[in-house]
Length: 393
Ligand SMILES: Cc1cc2nc3c(=O)[nH]c(=O)nc-3n(C[C@H](O)[C@H](O)[C@H](O)COP(=O)(O)OP(=O)(O)OC[C@H]3O[C@@H](n4cnc5c(N)ncnc54)[C@H](O)[C@@H]3O)c2cc1C
Image 1 (cartoon, protein in one colour):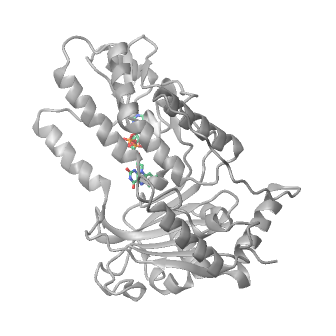
Image 2 (spheres, protein in one colour; image 1 turned 90 degrees about the horizontal axis):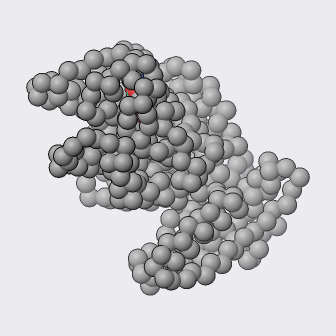
């Protein structure tokens, strides 16, 4: 991966950090429709029946009445409302970012493509802007055209990127939004990005939207009282920033299949609820927390909730945790003005001082239990200490 972190706007705009980590393995996104084809083939081979149709509440009732076990995987919308929201486990009431995704064809996956970013080429190109969001392009295997490139953008709330993403209404306007984004914010990559073209034969090559991370109860009942269980996004939906959704679904299904194999008797509400609780404890909760850590920018309530939770875990182990919060307040009449001031402060940061601080906390972090400490993933913006002499007026 080749990553570049940028900050500021106008004259203060600049690249503040670059790193090209070698993960020592090659990764490639594969069109899920290719993988689904393979899975469906195996399902057929084992005697499964596959039907494509819309299932409404009535037809779900019918399906559940004639089945030993009914699992609902209609994603975040669909039939998810059948499963009550778990208010205790659902932290957010609104999306934390706006998303834009588009798959494009163009330069091949050779060493030359993006080769100017670092020796060797053949990497994902990752650009972050401390205030506005993240833009990633990586190699992808598309069902029709094969080697291609997938763009994924995450815009922070109030970022001007949100408006830009909103201009995407089809694959062509999505491509244009991406090209314009690179021209304005990441011009060094714009020449390459301009070579990317729409995959005309695939109307589903793009996506725009936002996810409110939500946890539901794992079991519901149809109008006729039949028990049904939620899997995947229907049960727990994540902001895609940490890439947890599909992984979590696979883990949930694998555990369920193993449990079903060993189970004797009916698939009752109690049994299915117990399976969901096991999944929440073993994986879902951790995945949701990981995603929360990636979605930085918590408000006071968000931090309070996190501290309360930490204390609860500590209490269960008969321990006590003391928490100190180092907060900096920017008091302005509106949140917009406060955010502008924050941007100005970050732009005026004394870079050598911030970098010195980064080195110091990294060294301190290496002596902690996990060998990293709490600053390991902090961005330049996170490390600017507004009243500690790192900002210039
Ligand atoms: C931009 C983006 C990037 C992502 N990146 C990652 C990643 O890197 N790693 C990762 O693990 N996860 C990632 N995810 C999350 C991942 O895509 C989801 O978690 C996963 O697709 C959930 O699978 P699912 O089967 O539960 O739901 P879905 O994939 O949403 O499938 C539900 C299906 O049900 C159909 N449906 C809905 N209603 C009905 C109905 N009433 N009747 C019949 N059919 C219906 C829908 O059309 C859809 O085909 C990403 C998501 C997004 C948006």
